[in-house]
Length: 86
Length: 295
View 1 (tube, rainbow over the protein chains, first blue to last red):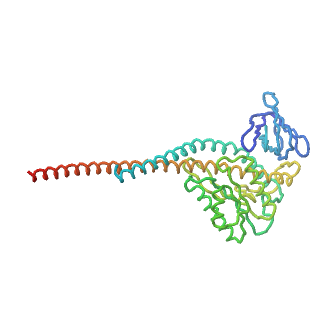
View 2: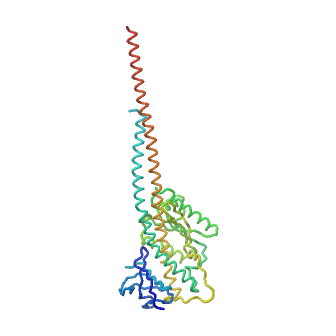
View 3: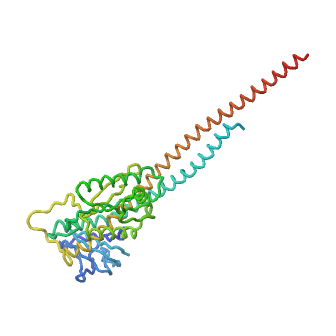
């Protein structure tokens, strides 16, 4: 049932940086690169400083630079938390 | 001009000058509340996500971590009290300090040694004046806190918690609406997992990268930062709201005062005129009777 999309939110302490629907999110955790597709298992990961890539529904690619962040996935809801995100 | 009238006029001038100041402060605060409120709203997604993440680990893993469970038994608790740097905000700072005192009293009753961390010049002065011990204090940003400020405070608290404090409490003022601000005391660490029930039996498959303990370790400082930042922003919004209200009633009082002083001054002026007339009439009478007698 890979018909649904991911609902992605990129937040930093002082604002919501980006939110929208996406087909894929890729980021680098302490253990290495990880790609999230719809219907991914619940996950909580520590991100290393670097880039998070989001492929939106429209096929565009959005990139964020994250400092000291987390990635949390549950029920197609992906949150990228960064101390600094842009 | 009569002495009485001059005194009234002087008081009216001084009240008017004060009114100009309070009116200006009222307007400044009113314009800042909106911005402060927006900052509170903007910071909540992050705070919510962090809280959800911690709640998820607490629910879906069997890890014991200081973040969610008591880890030391040092018999010590730390309290962070957030107040304003400046007064002229009614009972705002005092209400928070009082709430903090209640909390400290209840902690002491449980036999805990309490360390005080203070934000805002008002709390610092209050503690200094009473010769109470201050473990850490920060001033100068109460009406417009930045995340950097929150980080600094959070770092000290996280160190305290990982060191030798059993519990970290935070006292701040929640911004409920323009007219209601409520000082509250909340336990920040170990986290209070209200409404989170550990499911029985097998836990759903939740992945942690690299592992639950590691994730919690790096979540802890972020969680404290987010909580402290949110508390500071709410307190700042409350401070502006309290100041606006205090300054509004000061302006209203000045209006009242000017009104009654104007009436008194009018009466004094009228009394003066009446007196002058009766003096003139009396003088004319005296002259008239004197010249009548000499004839």
